[in-house]
Image (cartoon, rainbow, N blue to C red):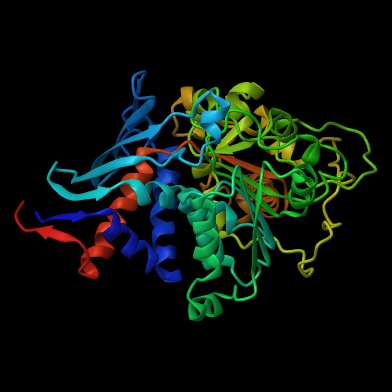
Length: 473
């Protein structure tokens, strides 16, 4: 079997030449693997129960953290080993422009028979695969006009780059927030401002405005309040050890009016945190009966996660005391991508949409999403193929519950029809929330993501004759 070796420059060459069609292919691979991870049985290769646990080794002498991330799918095996600098508790050290949270390492890929077929530098792949998973939720959003990004590293770059590639015609403003006006911040600004004009025009973001603000700026509180409240998507990509913004910006009445997708991918240890716990608590709160006279974006009652390991590793969830029944894995939701986003047919505008508000209460007095993502939503535990120890708040049963029968089976058909109607209503409400509600997505990353994306990148590299291929390795 041939072995293809890709350096960091080789990987960048492949990723920077991706077309929208290439990204769509990568998204399909990612979607299928995440769905199998979250819902598959143990005889499914990518099922969560089959994934080896990752190992974390911290070095007191160097202040680094090394991650060993093995993974398995139905067709391949892989392991990624990366080392990254741990965030310093010393504020002066944390402020330095030399602070680097980039993971350095490599990914080894093998077929299901154990024969190696790929060896890749992990630096760019790690950032790209995380952004690719996030893009599965970003595509669901009805409106993506203004984006605010905390951080200016590779994760920030690829989240914005994929957003522009996939939704460029709707994006008008991209705000970067960084600790300093450092070289990395200048580099990311230059990369987008001076991007190939023909590509910008073809992707629809020729007139998109980019700006950069420092957390050390004297007027930063005012700027954060203004930009976060105007944002349709907030992306947090820093190894912060304290919240990046004051929670009241998003938790008070005015802050809750606009629906937002918040993507948090920077923290990976219990003491690390980007999104304030109060914002997380607001998102998982079950809204009961009662009339609310202030218009608010719909809350789902759950946090979307890439894996339930977030409950132990992500500071946002640990410090907010989030339990498994208040989470839903992204792999349980990706099948809803087959349904079209729920658009309110209104133009993109700066004012929050008025169609989503707290006056929309179901007949039993409980918010619609609370019924879906509460314990009561798991009305048929036996239908789930997941390990009971891994259950989050939601398992969607896609098995057909209704078929057209003769009048002799009228009662059975009627019961099946009701179940199908209830299932359709649940899917419709979930799709509407993912498109127009407040959604928080927390990711700590998985080796499975590296395995899937790494394999696809190897295919693209071979097709484009990029890298070095050793025949009969």
